[in-house]
Length: 272
Image (cartoon, helix red, strand yellow):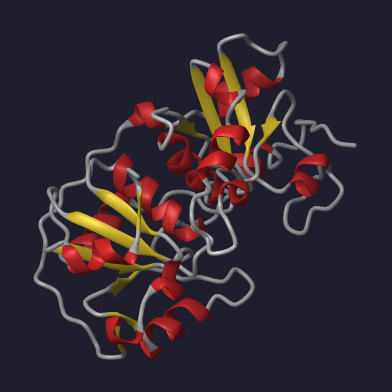
């Protein structure tokens, strides 16, 4: 597979930059504490809220992109260059790992991978609790605007009949999509005309890609020329983008996602 790699890849490839992005939205301290307790040898750590997102404002969603220069500096501190080969892992649900994967792709890196199964795929001999040090990198971020969709574009999409060549895909659970429950955002339901493909639906019980499920889940979506993924705040949609690319398909991210869309009081949403 192109983006997802097994433990053997870690053991056989040289000069990989390893990044641990474990995170729990219900316990923001968890990721850093878990990393300090045990992490893959040579891995650095990045925090979803502190490193992979910027300050929350009135609009822009709950996880806007961080300041570009600050993010570049953090990557350099972990030893990243523009030709680095990066392997990322989280706790296995591929959410925060997917976010970093997308960000590194967006900023110009080519060889970026996610460890299938996450931290649980590692063996005892792979782990350490030591404090890591890294040679300073010189990565220069080069954002690719073609990988994103703006709020204005999504708003226009939501106010017209379903286009034949474009589709907006909601990556949240069906319960949130339908408006049955909403634990975080101020409105329940989904953006008008959006279809639903839950980001976890492509993975088996070991958090590895199920190729048959992947084909089935994206069967209808793959027919569109222009696919835009979103979720609640621009995190789990990245996992869908990463999985969709396994089918040889490119897509875009609405970074602000549902939390940005409903931050505009006049916007209505659909639901059961």
